[in-house]
Length: 377
Image 1 (cartoon, rainbow, N blue to C red):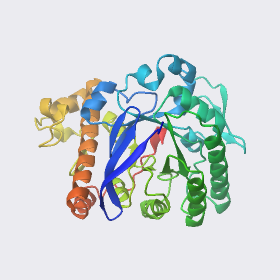
Image 2 (cartoon, rainbow, N blue to C red):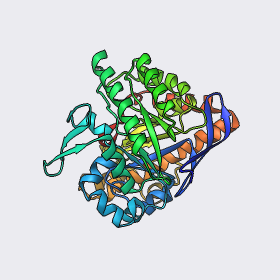
Image 3 (cartoon, one colour):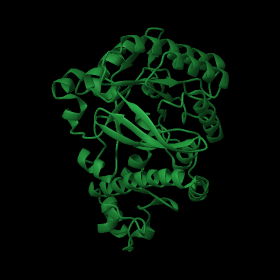
Image 4 (cartoon, rainbow, N blue to C red):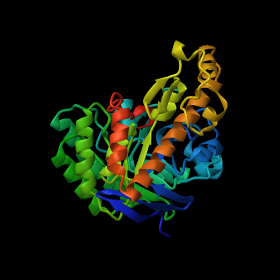
């Protein structure tokens, strides 16, 4: 059976609106995926995340294979049965941990020290595929090498060469017909290496293609240059995914370049620390100025948090350590991100994407390039 199917219904320049059909449902594109590193989005039930507007979520292979283990997840019905997700799930391969945990690696794979108990785990491209097949996600990612930037040409080239070779090995062993597998284009900010990697992956005929290795230390202008250039190298008939980048400015610019899927910890991480996403930029709800305000997080917002609670209560909850505070701001932030995606799709369809881009850039000029890769890409 066909694991995923892309259907494009409207275009505006390179930007496009469409759907991605998966075994667990249809996802409208462009789409933002909240990050559920350990199988769930922190502080929220899967049903709540879906009710807020999530149509696809990301979970992290590295964490799930350590706790509770891929075999256990498989016995409990895969990630959907285990965690209660009713929307499609994409799993990262663990490649970001090559960047964030600084493990040792060689041509064959990576050796990690567990963040839970210090035990040693070796992950190869083949093992990453097997683990994700057991987890049962709708889309799995190949194991790649994500170098920190800036880096020497030698470091980035080695990462690119290994990423290509590991992609070949992953493609060879992937066997679940009901699960898509995406390749990941690496190469840092070196366009020749990006082109070499993209060309090799396209030859391997993956079900979709991701742009990885960004928001890891490079300038925001370099991020967008890579996205625009690499997107043109990827086949139009396959979904394109920008990994771990989701600040509103980069997101809307990447959509304009032809990107379909995004993931980022930004809305949930900021929410847990009391910072809200709004159409006027970030709002730190822990500031004293909100102590007597009965205004919602954002006027006109219809999310559950804004409908029921004012800023004074939310600030109070944070000041006394009540967990409802992080939950409320996380709810608002995810709702805001999904409404942003709604507006982006509408803007592509009605030809007003440039106007929306200007609005986002104006509102978020101070927050652009802040990075979003975070703990899970």
